[in-house]
Length: 485
Image 1: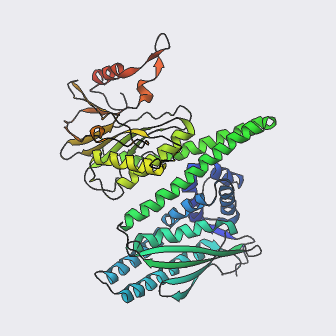
Image 2 (image 1 turned 60 degrees about the vertical axis):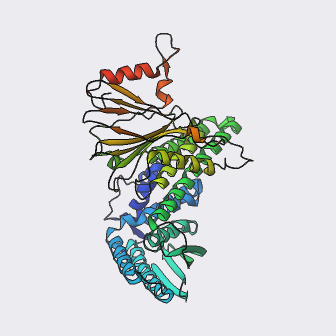
Image 3 (image 1 turned 180 degrees about the horizontal axis):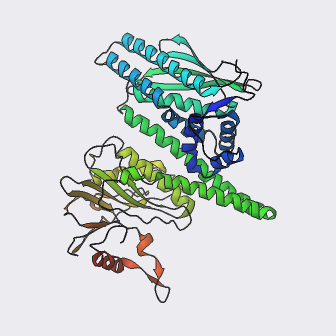
């Protein structure tokens, strides 16, 4: 018993793990922390469980369980010591089942790994919660060699089960997805207010996996689908806010604030899809981008393959149909599709990758069906860059590549005259063609969408910026850094 506390406490790490993810939804998390009188969370300190409870309640009420699922997918990263233990368990499991076709051995190894993992999970919960009791943790009961029931007791609400479901599947997927299909069914939950504790019951069922994807691909699919579902909820929230604006003239000011807040959340989430600094750092002598959506959120994006992959890396630029909410929805689909194409390595050549992107966009919007009501798509350019060989493999669909040497000689590598993802499939004659480009140190490369070249200005206010001015700038400033250009 802990008689020094009148309130249940949780570890700062348990809040940090949530804040790192919900930060892309705007200031909602910061406001809750601020209201609690806390400027910054210290992972090594303890805080009232109400902070996380209120945070999760607000996120669930506004964006649904998808948001909590995304948070749960990442929470193990806040507990590095326990993550090491789980990874060691995974190595033991992998060694045990290597080169075996014995179903009995696989099931025995599965049961041992699952029981040991749940022991670590129980330890995380029990050490991350402090209360006037010691009930926190996880218990496991076996129904069959591949079927288990778990009961988890923790300081969260009854509606927050998606968070815990995601923590289990994200970690189990790291090890088991090449052998097992994991089905997790939520049974029920019960909140005990006097204990500040909720009991969750889940049933885990494992089936032999017979597909062709490896664990990294399957886990990437889970993460991409989770982010996709969350952004859709954010955009739906934005659309609902716009509808409220039209229906509630008497509450114009408050409703307008809600609309702006929702669009800003969507903007933060869309910015979160753009390459982080670690994907850019060290790969270019200099790198710069202009990303300024006309309506806060929009359809243009650029993308870089993971910096953790060895060998050549991939840069892509895309211009999706529409502006605002429609363009943002489509840009997410394109970004997620690029993650799928290059989930494990960057061996797929750019021309082939563009046709894969064409397939993902068309099928993702159901535009491969005769009864489709939409006809949207994108223009795109993909570069596969090998710095060791100083070569670039390039292919474009209506987006070309500009190259300027240190001596000011400009070459415009033309793109195919096709767009991707629309109802009408790309003909054989119009398919993107792979181009192999060599470069020297000091060469400048640029890819632009019509967001730049169609800008209107000049003395009359009616002249577009155009490609001629772009080429003049590139040639004149061929010795400058990307930031200066």
